[in-house]
Image (cartoon, rainbow, N blue to C red):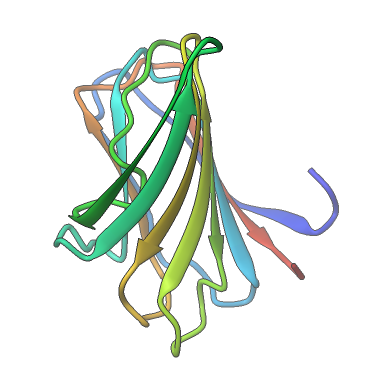
Length: 155
């Protein structure tokens, strides 16, 4: 990663976990980047500050190389549309201006697996500074799945 990225924390799943949380995130960065690598086809729901209410919206575009689809979700319970995909997911979630307390939080998510490529713009309708990022799975992640949270020093 470029010198502007600081690794805040990294967690490797044990094979029996279906949720991971990064807590006590410092407010010293401009943006956050969450990288998820692996997963064995388990869906992902990214939530901020423990909020599982219907306070998220997203617009998604995805394709499989021969066709493309777009859709939207409003009043959702997660930031990333709980994308499942197939094995070997690679997911990057960029959460912009996370410590600002006057604006709703936006995120850009890119997902690649062995069947689809996905781009997603998400919104958390809350002005609170983000101090926790949780990833909730539909089922357990494989023991090789890694979750890494980075802070960007200056975007």
